Image 1: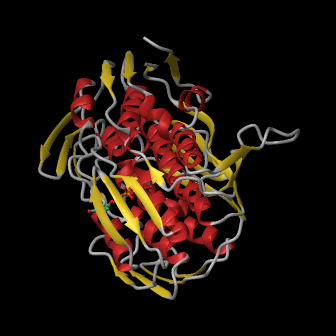
Image 2: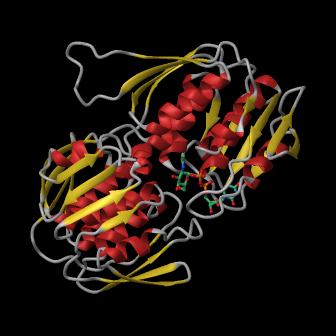
Length: 430
Ligand code: UD1
């Protein structure tokens, strides 16, 4: 298993190209199941999760092709991926695949909407606590599907097609909203999605579906109206930049000091996180080419944050912000309201010298003057990257074990950081 070795204490200077968003790329790829024509996705990130989803879609009969590099292409440009679900050969998504990536459960919506049936394994446990799918199933039932759960699988049937309906979410769910959008796009009649997730990735999916011929109003707002159509066509769509990658590197710079341009980043996708980073003492400036983050050697100010659905502070940046606050001059409170048990990084940050106490859903972080390198273990994607940025600011050597989590969601992390002066390398195997 690969590990990442970091020698901390170097400031970051230069520029980091921001990749396409993983959390937009995955539902966009799944949307390819809705049409028998080709869906072309540009600015695709090169990530393990994308490759795994290509395999999962391949199992349903989706063919794929990736454009090769052409002369004059930007070296950091994302991939262009063509997906063709002309023939769906299998409507079953097996446990061995779904259990490796929760988001693949979402295939249930397009398979059911287009084929009238789907059998998809329940995703099972996850390192960040219980993550049920009850609201996703509620969506399908509201749209008229018959559901049965047997042998760990959800068996969904709608032989006469889905029917538009009002869907009211009791809590904001990104996956639930993706499911509702994809299923309602091919249902008969109109659906209204209330208390929809407003995350930029939901808006990105809605925009792509509109290009495919869907009739959707209000994507990116909390009430979305979908007028179902009989069929969708192919389209070409560019994945939006990754706001979590942007926020992570912004926090890394705030932590180590330095001056980095996050190329292609869009500040409006993470304004709340950028505001918190500024309050902590970094300078954040938006320009046409991206977002520039600078911090001189002055100490960090403690800042309290609470995770919220978009446009609030994202749960996917909570662990990284905790790493940042571990070196602030004073105490801060970080509250996690989205996921239970998303504090697995606390014990690992403590190994680097951070002082953090848990009080229910709040972590109280008492900033320390210095962190010291140590071997640490990653437990989930965002937790792992919080250990990397803490390691960049720690004295001496930090080894982050189990980096396969990082490869799921961060493209060429060691390369991007290394180009900005970080001492970071991948130790292959062992
Ligand atoms: C997506 C993101 C993930 C991010 C999360 C919240 C992807 C691939 N993943 O995950 O990185 O952290 O949004 O921004 O895009 N819930 C239920 N029942 C359900 C579904 C969800 O109770 O059927 C709860 C969850 O347990 C959680 C909350 O709703 O407490 C929000 O989860 P949700 O927005 O659905 O997260 P994901 O779509 O799984």
